[in-house]
Image (cartoon, rainbow, N blue to C red; front, side):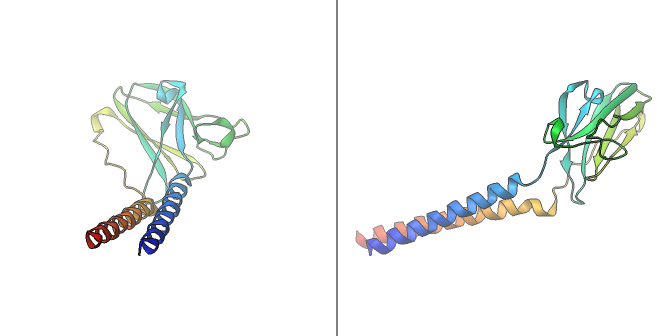
Amino acid sequence: MKKIAKRVITAVLAMAMVIGMMAMTAFAADDTYSVIGSINGNWDKDTDLVKQADGTYSVDITDVKAGSYEFKIRTNHAWDNGEYNLEGDASSGGANAKVDVAKDGSTVTVTFDGTKAAVTVKEASAATPAAPATPAAGDSSVMVYIVAAVAALSAVVAVVAKRRSVEA
């Protein structure tokens, strides 16, 4: 009986490792897109965009002072992974995206659809609190893997506990 318990434990632990690796792969599969430029205060600071349920990415940059700003969207916080402006791919030295803000305290929303950026400005007097980002439908797959791994480990613990109570 001890051999069977060991085999069950080994199989369940191996399955938990595979599920965990699948979860890590699913979690790491998406690229990260970020806004970089004077809209952030300087060209050394990335502001990550959040994936939305419709597959686009967006971020609200709040409390922006009046002025003219430039930015680009870049992939995985690096210049050599792809960069985008309002016209699309700007990897070959394309122009920066530009936005003018009329009033201090405005909110600039930058969105990215995978091919080009878009920008809107909500003036300070009309600004409303931003709605929280809605996770994309596929993002729940990681949680499914984690729940499955926890359930498998719980089953192992139950089998071992039952086995010990039978032997006692």
